[in-house]
Length: 371
Ligand code: PEP
Ligand code: MN
Image 1: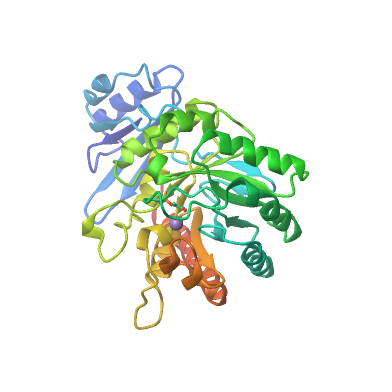
Image 2 (image 1 turned 60 degrees about the vertical axis):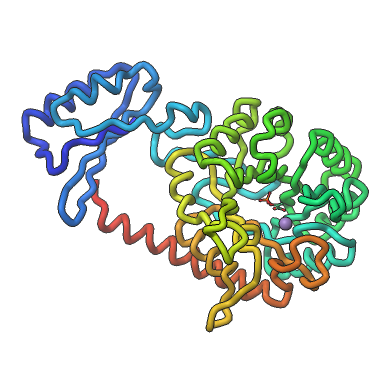
């Protein structure tokens, strides 16, 4: 719960003292005070830390120095925050995930053949990348389209991943039996790599699938926001995963369906990186490929996919999920948005620049924001 005090309130004032005393007397609750100096006003926010479910917002709003009260985690019981710096943090197969890390998952939207998988892994290894994406169960708009190679492709993908040092593969599952297929295949091969189960945007509210994916603890989860529902509804859908037992979740933005996003495939939602990080403990990812949908470039030959990736990273994104392909025009799914392998080094360096910029922005914020 955040208690926002009236602007420019003096700490020596009676109103402030009465308010502080009342907050300090709440049992089982710690308080954490932050003062933000803006252009016009100095605003003090007091975070109430601990279980605030029994604290009456109305009573607090009635205190003399209080302007308003915001309950931050009332609905997001397992994934919401009670402290601003609270973050889900987990290591999976040697890779760390939290709201402070950045991992790039560049790979195939849909696996088409063994040779392309190996070409992608080889290049990733040359660039010290240990994460990737590999789609084998593809949810498609048309029943007549290519639906992925399915479980028969798992052994050659996992074997090659082990060979090239790939630690985590984001892989969408559209049915609970896919989880078993992946686990069995990995086990048979002696677990040469790891898998992060991806929930696609079309299944964001497939609650039975969410319960199955959240009900296992072997694999972490990459949850894509729903493309036609509110952010609030998507976060509640992620709560289904946590409520079923698995909190090792990265929440992935991927744009929302709206003609207002044209000419992009979806309305790009990078502005939600900091929102989801503020509202929840989940690391936040961004999929530039499915957001933007094509490789259009500006006068500097920088693509919208690169620009939006940089925008997400400069805002603190923790994961990028990016389509690449050895020969994009030949890709069986989403060929218009796949970055060629030749351009991958450029993309990775561009992302690195954005990350350095984000880290510098944090230092700048520390200089100006004094508690
Ligand atoms: C994908 O990442 O392969 C995919 C289908 O994305 P989305 O579910 O976001 O459309
Ligand atoms: Mn795709």
